[in-house]
Length: 356
Image 1 (cartoon, rainbow, N blue to C red):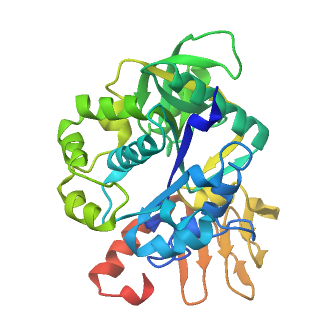
Image 2 (image 1 turned 30 degrees about the vertical axis):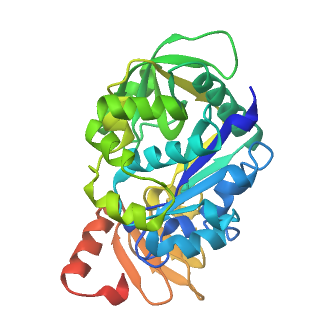
């Protein structure tokens, strides 16, 4: 396809509360590095090099992080879009589509998240190009999915139907979307072979997704039409609080008719909780894992994330999660890692903004 039609929107909002205390309000996870190198946002932009010039890469983030996003993303300042408050992904993607149409009326919008780990970049770019080609061909809404290798309960799943054509990577018609199943259901999905993980990477014709928003989320679409310039901070501050808060998955993808998923085979992980870090951590005896300095003595099944100088020593314990930063140490049962957000809520109630 004509790649000059492609415009990229990187969603870099959110506070990353499930990664507290590593992730903070002033420095949420998309601005952190998980391998000692560049931040997640910087890596997300860099892996697009060679496919889309940075002049056509836009980053949407919270207003309080706009300067930080400009520093990390390496795109023109005008390509940083500052949301005055979070309104979930449907509003975000609507803004991106409006911006894309100011560049080209026939623009194809690729939507990525800023907090994914990705490997095998040649396969990643091939999947993006395939998704863009399908989205460019009429009113088709495209996801990128990946074949699950474990019964993950933190991801959404896409049930696939018949194969679309003989091209590679393969693309399938979508039968249904299934949100974050329990372990038993996820195991059944994996064994059945008819489900892919929903990566949260999308491709839409800019006009097509705006028409879909008008059809399925008319209140949101009407609000967006009130924007004279979707990149203007004052305009966004006026309109954004009036918009409904809803995800593109719930609001559009689960209800639309022409839905396709490209089955990609690049390496992918969604950094949703510390268990995602565990999948990329250093192994130790006793099924222990660490990132950063750690020693395990008569300890088993524990995870240490040490982002501060020095060493964390665990002795005689089992199944712990220990996260250490320069000013805070979190210790909890590893199996309860999802409850970090409850800890954050408790600290908010106690007025401990100094820790958030």
